[in-house]
Length: 195
Image 1 (cartoon, rainbow, N blue to C red):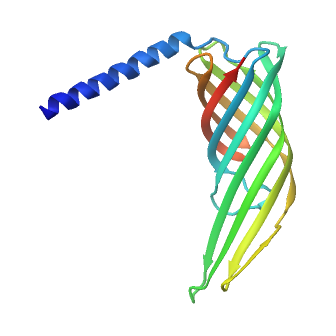
Image 2 (cartoon, helix red, strand yellow; image 1 turned 180 degrees about the horizontal axis):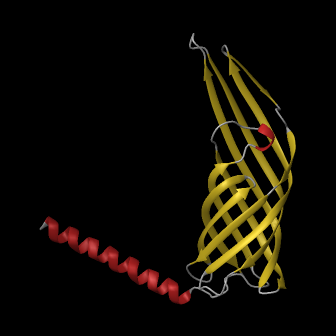
Image 3 (cartoon, rainbow, N blue to C red; image 1 turned 90 degrees about the vertical axis):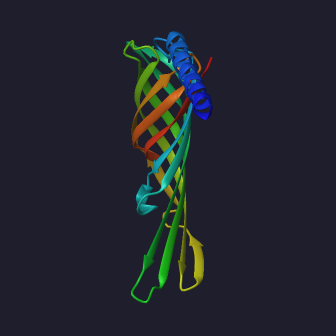
């Protein structure tokens, strides 16, 4: 009896996933981003240690909001803003097992501009752009049971480049990925279109 129930549940889940994917394909727009659209995306990934404000691997988070203002050739040109965050921690240990820990917390805020083009593929949006703004960093270290907070590079310029792609399941929601040199080196997340 257990095998029958598990088979029924597995079959139902498979049917629902297949049906929802078929429905999503039929509702996905050919050009997901058009003039007049507003796009909100967010993602998590590998953080960027701007101006040596970090060491090793650290998580990063970025949220961006853009408006498609101008039709330029086959695509659209967007302008908006973004907010990013990254955190890095590193521990050193010597022969006597004395540990020295460092922590960096980085916040980046800036304007953002990109060019979006969908290649006439249903649900696909491919884009590239630049962020420009300012970053803030807090640096903390622990050494011999003492602890201090101070700015490492407390304020730094925030500029970079990013390449991204989104796939919309329907006219409103999709998945998003970006790579480049911005608040994150690489990230994956969600994208929403607001009319």
